[in-house]
Length: 302
Ligand SMILES: NC(=O)c1ccc[n+]([C@@H]2O[C@H](COP(=O)([O-])OP(=O)(O)OC[C@H]3O[C@@H](n4cnc5c(N)ncnc54)[C@H](O)[C@@H]3O)[C@@H](O)[C@H]2O)c1
Ligand SMILES: O=C(O)C(=O)C[C@]1(C(=O)O)C=C[C@@H](O)C=C1
Picture 1 (cartoon, rainbow, N blue to C red):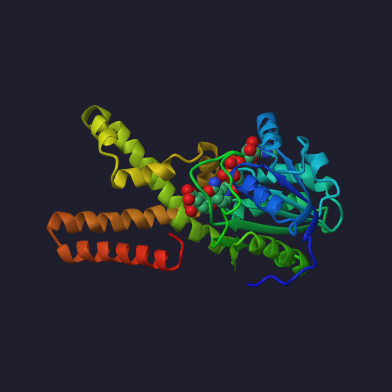
Picture 2: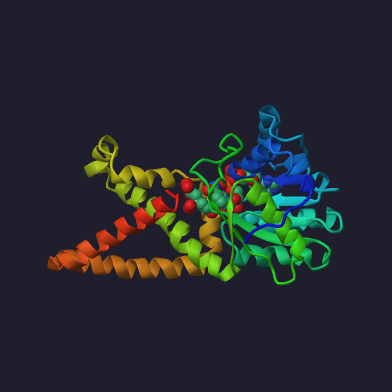
């Protein structure tokens, strides 16, 4: 999808609620590119985050009260953990001006959209445009963000059937201005795709670190001493934020459990091949892994 051109700025007032890794990256990029918004406001439930955003100077204004922050905004983007997106929407939607756009960046979509819809029931004049930038790191908080985070990364768009085209086009234009590539899909498809490419890998990383830790008596010093190997690559994503990942796992339960089931079946096939010494299956699996990595590199995603 390609965004239609608009006369800049895209938004007169842009509000980011939850200026952590993702929210502060949007803020930083928007502060650099004033064609995105004339006025940029940040709001967070945590006073320490508000104070830090002020210190960093990554917003024109910091307003701790989200209800106040969204007044007169053309676009409000919820960048909070998926478990609270519905509750924050219920808090801010009644205070938003007619015709404004509400967006969010949660890592799961079916349950998030269902959680937001009740807040919109009495506000058909608010355009809701769920989005998901497929970009991030294992770090969180306002210090972790950086303006190039979304460059050349996918941003998935999940407009509802009745979302006005102009609102979708403006959100597309904002992500394109931040360097992202766009793809539209249904929330159900999104949740299955993300379950395999993002949620299951994190589940495996958290689990393998736990398994290694449980073997502490036998191997812990070796794990730590020799971790400059395959294990180290798992520890990077295993360092991610517990609240964010608890919420993702609980909000994408069905798709994640389906992918985990498929993974366990495939792992069992590999285990049987190793037991039988079936080198064809073993080599085929490894070759598929190498090919997938090569494709990611060719697509500039690794
Ligand atoms: N981290 C990633 O790699 C990544 C990538 C894409 C999307 N996401 C999604 O983006 C969202 C934010 O993730 P993040 O990594 O930036 O998180 P983060 O922990 O860095 O920031 C979240 C911020 O939300 C604030 N917050 C929590 N509850 C709030 C509330 N009720 N009202 C106002 N503020 C509140 C927190 O204080 C924090 O500052 C999540 O929904 C996550 O699933 C994350
Ligand atoms: O790169 C990382 O560290 C990430 O965890 C980013 C990552 C991912 O799994 O790719 C994590 C969650 C998202 O919703 C999108 C991106």
